[in-house]
Amino acid sequence: MARSGVRKITVHDGRRTCATLLVDLDVHPRQVMQILRHAEFSVTMEIYAKASSKATKDALKRLGDSLDG
Image (cartoon, rainbow, N blue to C red; front, side, top):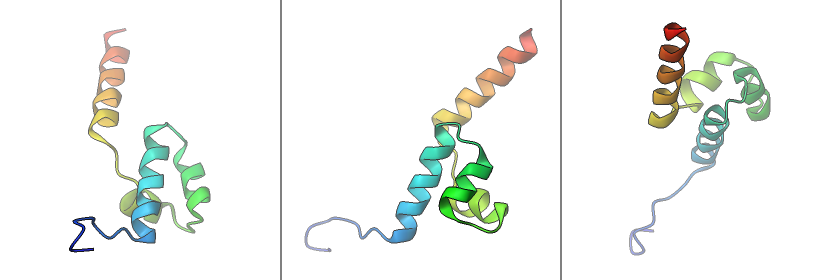
């Protein structure tokens, strides 16, 4: 891997990517949990799923829009 400059990707990297993409697609967190076959919600949302900057900005914009009435 070092010679090619390509970073090693683990199974967990793939699972984290899957969780993050599902969150960005507004899939309900419980469904993400079921897809990843986690027994605990906190594992899914605190360890695997990361909100992207765009998703965070979009959420804040929607919140602001809803408060504007």
